[in-house]
Amino acid sequence: MNAITKGGLVTKGRVLLVDDDTDMRDSLAEVLADQGFDTAVASDGQEALDMLDARAADAIVTDLIMPRMDGFELLRTLRARGRITPAIVLTGFGSLDKALSVIRDLEAYWFLEKPVKLSALQSLLERAIQHSRLIRETETLKRDLMLQGALGRLVGRSRPMQGIFSLIRQAAPSTVSVLLVGESGTGKELAAREIHNLSQRANKPFIAVNCAALPENLIESELFGHEKGSFTGAIERHAGCFEQAHGGTLFLDEITEMPLATQSKLLRALEERTVRRLGGKAEIPVDVRLIAATNRPPEEAMRDHKLRSDLYYRLNVFQIALPALRDRVEDIPLLADSMVPVLNERHSTSITAITPEVLERFRVYQWPGNVRELRNVMERAAILANTGPIESAHVYVDGERHLEAPEAPTRPAPPPEAETDSITVQVGVPLSVVENAFIDLTLRHVKQNRKRAAALLGISLRTLHNRISDRRESLRAAAEGRTAGEEEATENPTAVMNASARGPM
Image (cartoon, rainbow, N blue to C red; front, side, top):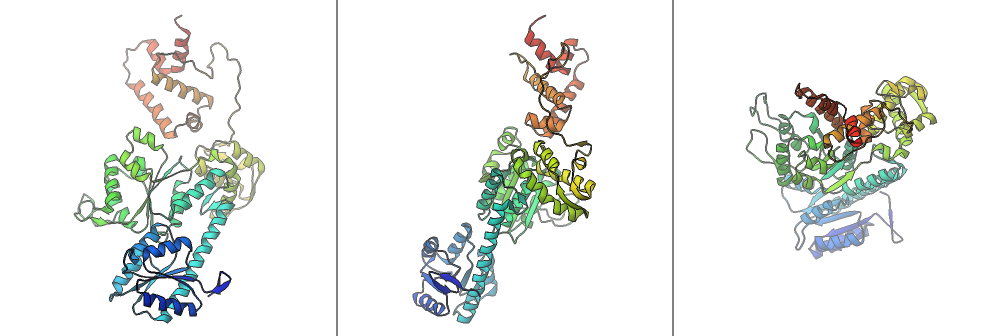
């Protein structure tokens, strides 16, 4: 193995020996020092932690049974702190199964039975230190990539994205729940996967569930599983997502679309760290790191009774708010360029560049669909261009019209009977009429483009559709005998507001 320089001396690496048996600990330290290792000793887990805080080690050799803090608690503490130092456990177990369970549960590197064979310990230490060095090199490479504008599949050099990268790296080593907040298409699932990939659970399952896509009558079965015969169609036992994600990470997207009754059961599963399959009686232990996401502001979701407040406080241990693409337009060229190799491979195209004209149009567009919309526009453009650069003629939105910048505001004097670009509000006008008036005015301003209208109003496209639909339903259900004035007030709220502001005729 490669040598490591420590304090001017070339060694195989620094090893911390943790054991309350002074004779055994000191003799091992002496032998390993003779073999070229830089050794240090501690009498229990607490002393080991203090020493590691002062100076890191390349590997740890620890006994399990010790006073004050034993080896079990030492390894649990190191794991909770996100330490990646490989540990070799010295055991007195006579059972291989018990020893392997320690390796699995405490994430030790390996174990050796007492009395220790020195040749085996030396070989294990060399491999463990090499493993530790590779992990450090990987972490350094990831930090370099982050500074260059990439963290896994997340891309961005802007200050908002560099902040997101930093938060992800801080959250990843721990086991706390994470709540990802951001508009649709901002990359919440990519962020969740990166948290998982940078955690100590990276080699365990990552299970993603879209709560909005699951029928209400099936979501509990998907999350918690069911026993055979527990309901019509349950022809065999099914392990739910919690069991499937055991040891790894469970990502619940659109958590506010989960029924409130199911949210209550989810909260219990998180608190108790157990699940019970539908139709089952046994409580099944689960070790799952939960990451949830929502495209609605959590406070709004709680106010609208879409998210239980107790579940929110349980999930919101570490919140990461992903920025909209319009708030990091400087990342658009980097994002678009990063998509080109992927699209070339996927569609067998030969795109070589993106013209400055296209990038400028990308820069001024509002991107209500965020990075997902950019990817879709790029995919269509790559197929249309096929070879060479992507040019303006290849760029469309919604599959129909060219990408357009927001219209420059103009202020022509409107004719007396023409629709204006403003409304006047007077005290006494119902709030619903004011809201409808602003929706109508905004839709006219953007020529009935509902995506752009929703972006300008600061609401989701779904919310805009719902409010337009609700108004049509109320019109449909209105009594046949309403007066002409009432009809105009409902059909044209802008007109009635402006009229009321002028006073009686």
